[in-house]
Image (cartoon, rainbow, N blue to C red; front, top):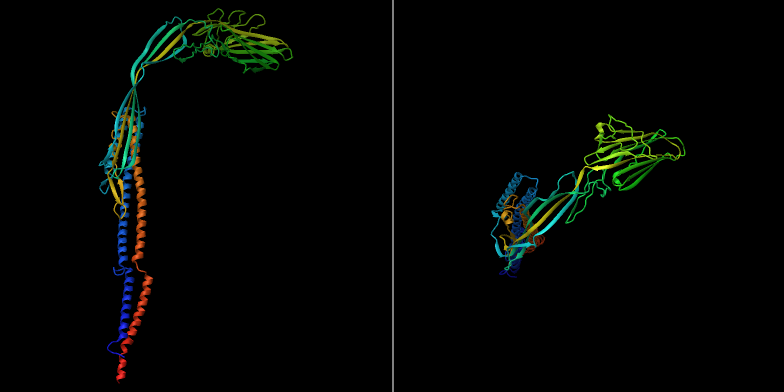
Length: 620
């Protein structure tokens, strides 16, 4: 038993110190929440943790940078959108001004609005800034290569002159003794007409410069084709008497009686004879047959004399055993209508009353000066029908002819003839005839008819010839091809999208002022050309749409880039947490353990310190 060295107390003290140190470390970790509070805790872990923390903070700032880049693109897109709307309006105004319904004053007002829109496009391009950085009117381009060209090609097609002749030949009526009109030039003009056509093509294509920088190829092709045609247009006229006063050899088929018709054909270097009216005729107005006191209107019985050619045509009708046959005959110089009413009923003493109304197809007047003329009464008149000769004559501006009833043999004269009243004669010229007291036994026939003849034409036929001649002296076609083909690197805004160098996204900046879009001088009034201006607006729309497509793609890319950066930062935070943060449950367990050991060591130290006291008992 020794008192100079209390080995038990020393051992207990050592253990107590270790327990206190362990408790202190656990308390530090629990209070800070970090497993590594100093390099001594985990030197390698601390180095990795600090590097990760630098990455995380860099990625968080990169995410904010991307948000700023997205805002910049959206700002530029807003300017693009309004500029596109104004170009659409300019195109609409140009098309409106090209319409022929607008006056010069209207076009000046339209031109004013086009110019105001051009100025506003420039204003929007100059004002669209982001943090004082101009976005839409940049001209500080770096041109890599310029392959632009201007070519003018002039061709003169031929051989010339060439002549095209259209001849129109027709026939018509002029008063007798009208003089011929020899062929003469009515009109002759020589002028040059100009036709303009415009073709436009434009596109913007991404390229990479030889040193690896991103750029664009700006390609625009404008083709203007101007065709100048110099020609002489001549119109000649000729009127020559045509020796055919009676028209005996002319085709009257399908001609309307009483109208002056002619047929026109456009021919080249040939003559086609025309068609002429026939000599005249009558048309049934209505035909009524009364059988035993019962009237029947033969509404389907009418035959138009205008629809028959030389020869004859017959129509048959039957009612209650009474048969009516109508025969129309013409030889080209006269016209007859013959009726046959037969009693085939098997019954005698059929009481027949037959009346028909005719009217001349010519607008004719009754000539009452003739010795055979029938006077016209008011409102109507009836006259005795002569046994022979014409009943009366009809006359109009074109022809005179006679009207007579068929006589001799079995032909029966009408019982009465009535003409229109004087007031109506010029309008209708209707002639009503009636067979009123016919009594037919079974098998008997009532025959009657009338004729038109002795036509005297009072006008001559003339042949007319109109000739239209176009002589082309030259056709000059000028094709101007203007090509812009430039490789360039535009000014740009660099967006730092990561925590390392070269992690950069470039936002190009373009020039969308009116001069950059090629619409600085568009309009509908000189010196501007409306058709060229229309093509220029099409090109401007294509260019702006290309820019908008680029910015739209960039905006989508920025959104995906920000999501990637945020995910990357989140994963680094989780990794850094696993390295640096303390495990609270485990440290609580270690602290509890250390506290228990500390308490036990303190108790044992107390016992170890009491051991030397037992020596005093031995000394006693």
